[in-house]
Length: 195
Image (cartoon, rainbow, N blue to C red; front, side, top):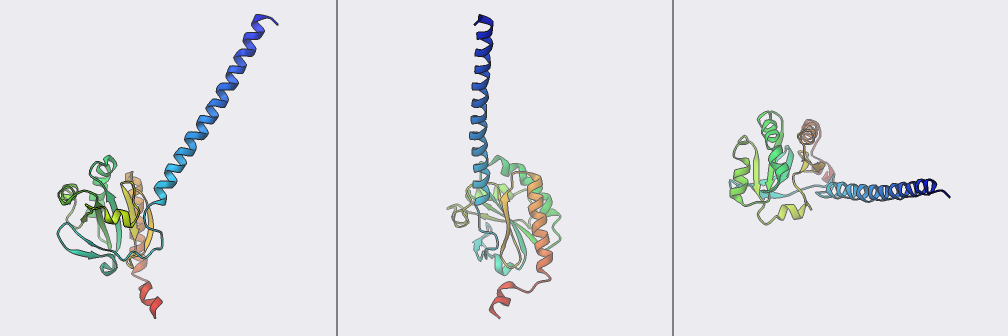
């Protein structure tokens, strides 16, 4: 064999090894990315779960989702979450344009002062909860923020998802709006079941 042929064969062997290495890395990181997305979507309450929860708002009122008789977009946030800060303007515009039966609630993992600071420039109709002990986060198994839950007027979870973009938050709010309009035409599911 000539030296030119040997170097050509060696080059192709090296290209083959690099090709296999790239495929292995692609498989590894692709699996990791898919697993992360599955973990994010696996958090939160179960869809179609009745969520009869009473929370205390930052102004000291007890708030019951089932007694409110309106659909909700519940947004879980935390103090050091950059994505939570990025979606704050869209929450403000959605709340300012709120003319339906959909309420927006912020469940903030910081203390009351931190929760007040987060909602201070949002419209007054935005409800806020300071979940200092992260009780609601644990109850609903929320592990990352911002995370959104859509609940209908009967306090049944209809949708959930990570709300890291304006588009995603708007789509979840639109889903809450649809449940508000469909709930106004349906009897209370709990009363119908007990009858």
